[in-house]
Image (cartoon, rainbow, N blue to C red; front, top):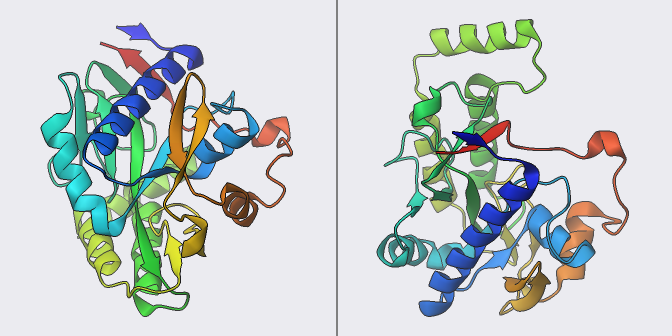
Length: 259
């Protein structure tokens, strides 16, 4: 196996994004860059130099259609994976992975051979309103899933021990929590916002900011993003054109390999 550096990771991620974009365009499925991927497109015209993942969103009303299209139209070597059919996925949202690679994710307590490849995240974007009880329920299940099943990245032995003890005492599996989160997401009532309710910040933006999506430069290609990218990024990051201090420049993945 060959360990991948950040530049090789970026090349694989960009290839995954192009595959995702091609299938969505072929099937007239709307999508957009979200989070740090959109930030990178606007601030860097591509990847944030220290970032090692990519995030996309698909309106909830098109999400199942997107999953079917990915599983039908992706070429060999790519797979759109969900937690109900892939043991290496521990999220409610789907991941499009390169099956000729493997990530060693220290956040997951599963063997290396069962983990998935380098991947992009595909979040459902829900029409919603603030204060919806279903969103509060979703937040509760998300918090407990993270507390019990997501390992600490800080490395302190007592945190690892605490997680291990909680998992051994908890009578419920990680899939139980994911099922509950998925059910709560489906109970969200439509409203004037569109939100990435499965993301870490549950960003809820006025729906009109997304519009019918627009194209933005990203490295050597063009990918879709919200029509009003400034409103989105200002809501999520405030002064988004300012670089963060070096100690806040997070890398998400632990290690990645080409098989």
